[in-house]
Length: 255
Ligand code: MN
Image 1 (cartoon, helix red, strand yellow):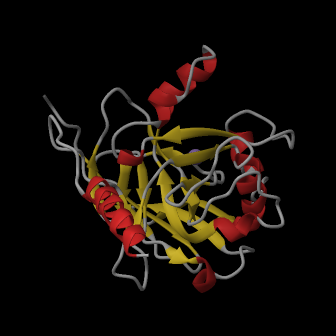
Image 2: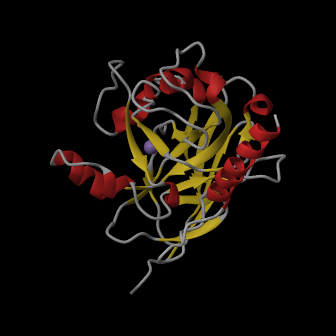
Image 3: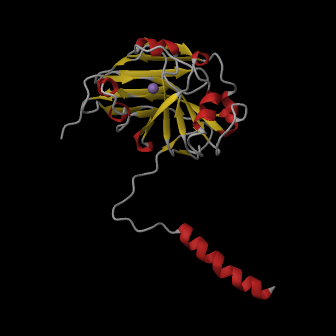
């Protein structure tokens, strides 16, 4: 017994030393992207950002496509593109058509691997109001030439998010209203049950292509009414039961 204890202790100490000490870095790592949680002092660390395309029929129509129920599709944004609600961001470079997309965001809090639709919500930590900011002209050009959407969708400050509300505090997803106003003028106005693919369907589907893990966010698509914003505009997006997401557009940055 004494021998066994003597053997196991140094091994344990070695493991804890390895995991506790940060590696030397050639330059400082960027700060971990995190999101506030309502009722918690601890924050939600962001891992990956999945975004669903065309998940409201009326938005698909305004983009010139009929929605189908064949399969949902996605694009991703870098975790570092997260911006907290209330921020002012510079008008991004490379675009002349910067659009708002108001979205219901699902925050994943547990592993989901090949999850069934019935069990998919077990992986949810909570929900938040978010903006999938879009360089529409770059996205349109990519679509027209069958190129990836990254330049239109994945750029600095492109994923805005309000504080997360825990799943139990929000309750069931149903007919909650989702809307967005620019300088007080309503532009987007719909309901969460207008989604083409439900939240459980999206989680289940994604979990057959990725091993969903705590920290992953899913932006679930935008209803009709997307449009351009300009420096000076103030965006306020609301979803029943969640803190509103707010964003101010500042002037473009210069070199
Ligand atoms: Mn979107």
